[in-house]
Structure formats: C-alpha cells, structure tokens
Image (cartoon, rainbow, N blue to C red; front, side):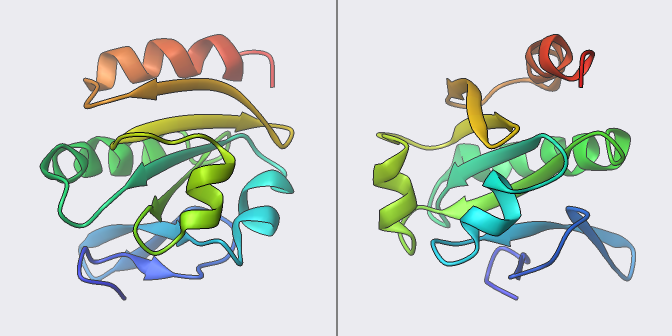
Length: 130
C-alpha cells in the first residue's frame, strides 16, 4: 500500500475493501497493459501524484464512481512520478488527468479537477453502448 492508501498491483475489479474504506486499484508501467489495455471492461485511469492536492480531492469521487459503476467500469490510478513511461506514452502534461479507455483505446481525456456530475456525463456517453 502506498502513502495515498492505494494498493499496488491489484487485480481485476477495481476495488478492494479495506475495513470500512474502499481502495482504488493502482496500476504502473509494468501492469498497465494487462490491467487497462487488455481489461474486459472500460477503464477510467486517473494520472496523478502524491503531492497533487486536486488529485486528493478527486479521489473520493473516483471511489464513488468505482462503487456505483462497478460492473461496467474499472477505476484505477497511476502515479506519474513513479511511472514515466506510461505518462509519456499518453502525453500527460499535468495532473490530475483522467483518461477513459474502451477496448484498449483512449476515447476520452480531461484534465484538472472535475466535479462528479461532469465525469458522469462524459462517462455516460461511452458506457451506455458498452
């Protein structure tokens, strides 16, 4: 578990119960291909950093989304400081950045803190047909 309370290398599902706290899965350069690009579900990836205050503010929203959309969407995080290869591969220039992957392809990207309502609107456009 890292300092943000995330569980590294967690398998499919996107969530793990840790007592009363739901944890988000964390992916890294090594696991990104299997956990995101080859996932059977659409995957919302939060590219963030431990030092990023907006990332911390986004975390409870992402946990809610992971719980509410559990059977239709995985929600994972990636620490940009520890995973430069994946960060550069997808052109991430600032955090937080959210990328939605459907069938292994990035279909939606937005940057900065987003309210839950706006995230849901953007997700709904892609998940209603998946």
